[in-house]
Figure 1 (tube, rainbow, N blue to C red):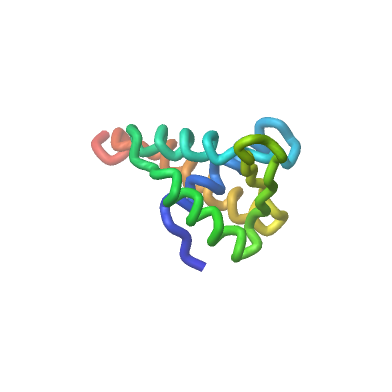
Figure 2 (cartoon, one colour):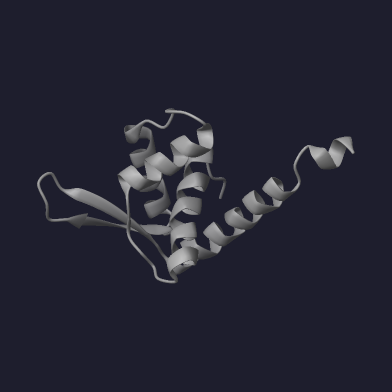
Length: 107
């Protein structure tokens, strides 16, 4: 199952929350979009695109969507066990890439 960049970043965002808090914490769409924007270095993630990407992850049973009974309704996203395994893979790839900066190639 090939994942888009937005899907990978969304899984990374939710997975990192779990790693930090040691609890499967629901994460809001706003938090996910902000995380993606931070990784793109600017405001590039459109809420609608992120929402569609998250819907595809839900169809693949990688996360679940919960709607909080507020006005307007707030959607939160939580990883399934399979989603957490995929998120851990993505986080390991990200951390490995970050630790192998350009200095290694030029020294």
